[in-house]
Image (tube, rainbow, N blue to C red; front, side, top):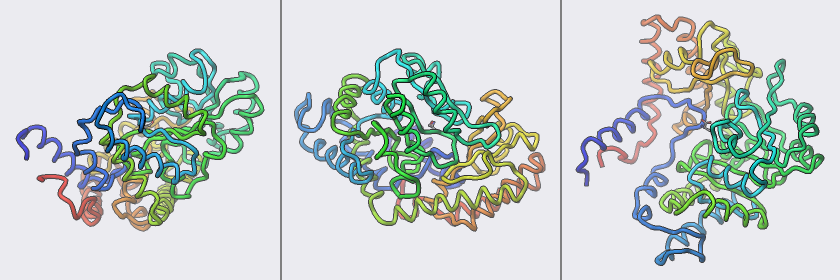
Length: 414
Ligand code: DSN
């Protein structure tokens, strides 16, 4: 029953926006109806501080079952020894992992935010930058890929407690084995944040960090296509430290309705079709990047191996903000993004980040991605030409309406 007209009007409008627009924000996806349904259940009422079998509240027998399901499934999915599925977000997963691996003030070597790193990998205003001594490696100016020689040099010079691999805007395969070898050489722990690529790792479309990392963190809502949240994987001795770092260290009561949704998403990712999905995400990203380059747009590092790409719109005389706005006006959602060695400030930027996880979920093919690339290129050639914008908006509208996200369920108007 719905009585709050204002709140439901906004919720329905957002559901309709997602159906109407093509989502190219690389960190977003469309979770299944079953995943979304689990979040709208009575599990949200339950306090369950602690872990299954060791809770600080009574009445936890059913949420224990749910959390055990989620932990068992995610361990099977990634071949990990132990898991913690309680982090409310990737940042809280990273907080617990860092607290488990080192002490406040210790040196951590991570990817530069300006070159595609994450906020919780040492931004000066984030907990990570406030409480730890972060230093950064980047991508080379010529190839725009992570230079493992530079990582090794920085590691030998700094002798960090932790080396952190993982990125938010990086389109190439990350060599976790090479990171592990450098970490061993300098006696550092290796932490991997696979937030962006977790679904590709689960679907065997990207090498796994699990054999190499002391701790692996990730979010469950990006390529993995689950509910909004985080998780941590590690061996038994490390996960004990992660568990106490997360609760009571960084969080109180876990979100049991979200953990139920994680359990469902992990089951979906264990199904054979998920490997087909992950392969299609990569194939679609490649089709999009190749066609954009054929149309004269520069892609950072010359292409993509995963779901994401950075388009250097500065080379066309546009800022990332201007390109984001122009694309939004024709029903394509993306985000402005710094490119490596960017001269513009972050709120202007010279790039837009595009990703194919969400459009692949709604069924767009590689051919559709070529059409989409032509739309983007046509528009960015003449962003203030209304007739081009009208034509592109029509094509995007047809692509969206012929690929509904939730064709069989009524997420709005229930
Ligand atoms: N904010 C997320 C992203 O968009 O990539 C994680 O950094």
